[in-house]
Length: 248
Image 1 (cartoon, rainbow, N blue to C red):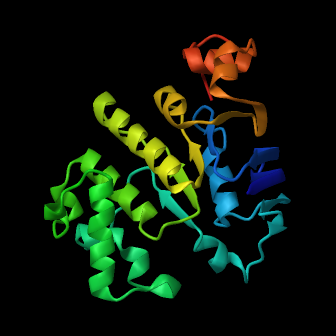
Image 2: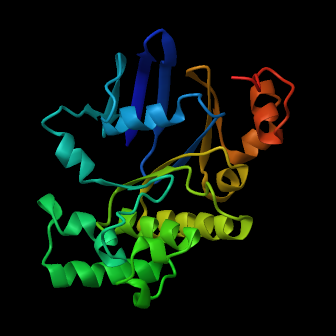
């Protein structure tokens, strides 16, 4: 469904992406791992069209999407942001229904609220919190509300940016289980960037290691655990010594 071909991006003299190629099949959950500052977020922004690459292409269903076709592309995806990124001035249900209250996916306000409450239930949140504001929720509840927003419009593609950052191990496990369940239940194509190996093992069908601007390694979780590739083994074991410099 998603193909990245030879993507390159530099900021000034710093080369961030240097010929990245990646395929994500329909219905697959692909997780991109790599250290901080290796270009994971830049790659995601290039796929979304938020950053223009210097070279290469992003294809959806085998076709490049033009600037004119970007809105149609964006209507097909949902995203869970790293910090949940809820709007402080809106109650939770309006956060969840944000895309349903404006733009091409607009629904009547009463219907949008019903959908929001249904999605909140799907991520284990009570309808009682619908009229609360983000500041009144814990970090884990905010993350689940962000996940409810990501699935509110029943997207075909889901993007997850560091979905468990800042959460305790128990809540991280809850989020991972929700993501795995939602991806399977909805049959969506999912692309996640993370450095949390717990998330990788919980939600990945395939794993790709991004290092020095290129995809260093790709494979399944089982292949990741069995590989002798020194970059992969250093990363998953969290060792300071190895080919990946700990001082970047």
